[in-house]
Image (tube, rainbow, N blue to C red; front, side, top):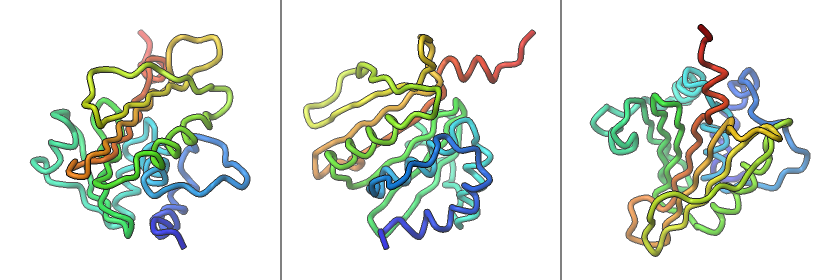
Length: 193
């Protein structure tokens, strides 16, 4: 059994009632633990913070104290959890702007990049995945990859995905993946006049 399989097995009942972000794929290749956690915690809960919080609680994960969570939330309001798995130390955060992020203390950059790309390129129909340009300066040992999900012919994104990996062995976090609701999703959730 893969190291993160216990978490997935424990989460299956909650995911069965959760709104699926993507249609299941037959014979999908095995995911690395980081990508599996990002898929389970963030991609399956885009725009659904209460469901994510319920999922974490049902797995015995208590939110971090605000002082501990502040670094993960990068100054935003929200909630964060430590997620200890057999494969390493991870954290999940949900900021009040709808951004869900997974952090890995240690990660193989090439494996994580491949897993992330595979996840976001499997956009639910009718959405299509688009590669987006990177933002901001990064250090020499960092790589940033960005994608968006959008309806064909539409400029506004439904969701924006970002992965940053860092090769340095002394880095406190070697991988960070996030999903943020895009402009189109935010407009759909805003009540009209």
